[in-house]
Image 1 (tube, rainbow, N blue to C red):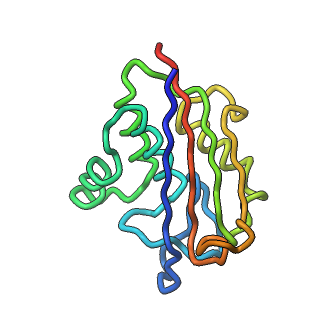
Image 2 (tube, helix red, strand yellow):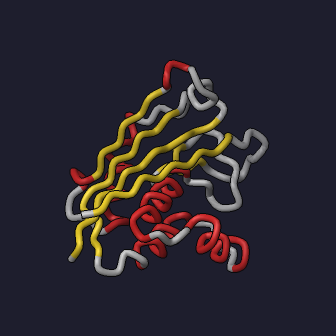
Amino acid sequence: MKTGLGQDSHRFDLENQTKKLKLGGVVFEGEPPLQGNSDADVVLHALCNAISGITSVNILGTVSDDLCLKQGITDSRVYVQEAVKFLKDWRITHLSCSIECKRPKITPKIEEMKTSLSELLGLGDKKDVGITATSGEGLTAFGRGEGIQVLCIVTAVEE
């Protein structure tokens, strides 16, 4: 068994009127998007980093930059799909995500996010995805509403 820890954070892009806020592949209507070259799905970016912790392949910054900057692919789901290819003889069995933000409210979309992430990773059951959210009592920039931070832990077993 292996575990990988991933973290990512993005600032809100209050000037962008065309991009949508996506978290875990789910659109949050009426919320400002996050800054980034891609769709800036901070949950999927933290997930990529967690997978990198298992595979030792730097997905964000190398593989994703090639996809985004050279090929124009901005959908972070594609980055996760590429990251999963590096698992080779390993299979993800569980994902746990902790989201820190003042906005948006995460709880109403947790089940939709769990389904999205479960399907993306090929997990058999959305019960294999845990999502928690906190404002951190406003002690950080994320809790004050300046952006979103995500921590992910991925568990994988050898096949």
